[in-house]
Length: 299
Image (cartoon, rainbow, N blue to C red):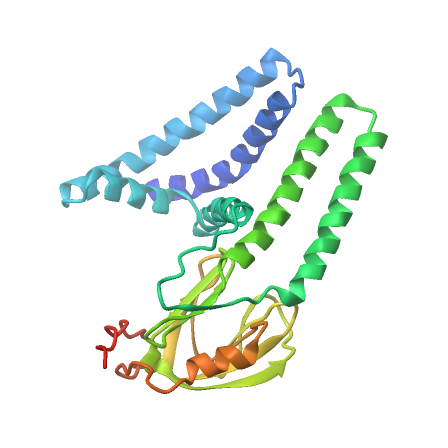
């Protein structure tokens, strides 16, 4: 019974939170909202939160009795109450906004000493610029033609925030490049949406190979080939000694034995991956990712 209530609460959260966000946007924009509407909306939110607390408190208490800290128990409750796709979307958005700040000050995200970064934004820069231009034009046109103050305020705030998010998504891709680290390990990234680490010993070979796969950002074939395409193209193919596991942008898991990704300078990326003297590591067993090897001792 409690499990059914929890599932119902997830649906309620999906329904209530967007409405609450719309009210906040209106208030920030200076729109006057009738008191009865505000009171009813807040009562609904408080009721959903109270019911959520009633359903999730036994889980929190059980985790505390099992020895979890308050933070660990609280995270367990959040994972049980909030759908994984929603959690990841929220985290992606915050990371993208953080990346926009890094981009503004011309910094990049977590590049260890000795690692070689490889950008991959070339094919999408023009597309993102065109999309940004269209968004700005749409915002200006709608601001001029919408006569109703409430609708005008909501659309204006949403459109401006949309422009910020477009910039943030591109900034995340610029500030989080692919990395070939000092020990020869590979870190594949696409902004804040995708992050895959491959130990040096798992890399069997790498070559320059331009392909134009169908599908979205992350696509896995039946034979275990992962395509991480940018602008619908990949330029580097990496064969692995065993399967590595990865997490898709919305939380689904998968595994791959061949990686195809885009790098703006594919020859340099392949040269870094195949350079002599890369640190060796035990080969991977199928379906598991081996731990990173320690750095090679100096000669």
